[in-house]
Length: 299
Image (cartoon, rainbow, N blue to C red; front, side, top):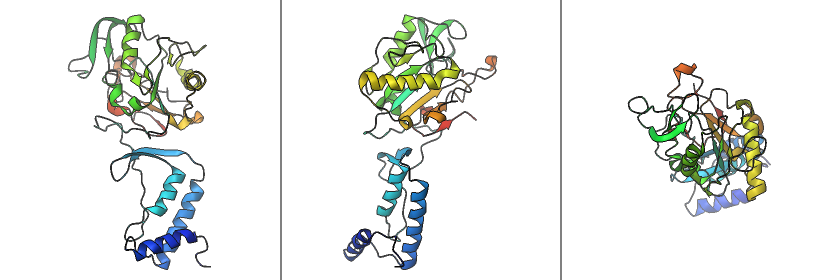
């Protein structure tokens, strides 16, 4: 038959919809073009893996696998029988959304943050240089230079990003200061699992979601250990593509793609010239925290 690849059940359904006025019957040419398009799409996307966290035409948050998107193409017929995608690309790092895209509610996602110049900014630097930062007087931060802990815009607003619907963690090369700074950071990091445990871990023994002293070159490994901790200690299994890591330091997204994790460099708009621009200055912005798959670095 000329249209052998077409599922007869689907055609019957479409014809029934046509008779009720819900859809128009496609011409032979339109059916051939659509069958060819779907076959090609299925071949390219035979492996189920999420491709986007986005919003559908009703502005509802969605998360689909590429295979699901291909299947939904068959069901999204408009008056000319043109298949339409159900997901939309996530915003760029320059988005001004107050609340960034949320992941699908049915998934267990994990957001992991660096500390220095990601959740924090350069000490005592606010005002015109970093207008969205907040200095916490009396709480010392020893990272790079000593001064008062200064929270970045992100550090004050993790709960206004999509990560508020995820489990959370920290992987930092630094120490996250003393008990006072750690207490401040922990109080601000409340995701879907509530307040994080008070224990801070080393990379040699990860027994909490708060890991400090992890060398930059080992951060992907420390994140993997943190994912294992959630599975073993909390019975929460998190798929690799639902792991999101955010770090200001140039080069710290290396090693994540190989594990199937997502990683994004942040504090792109403000870099510390006194350190050659290798690290951020004001720290991360909430609008940089995007639920987008893949690895992204500052331009």
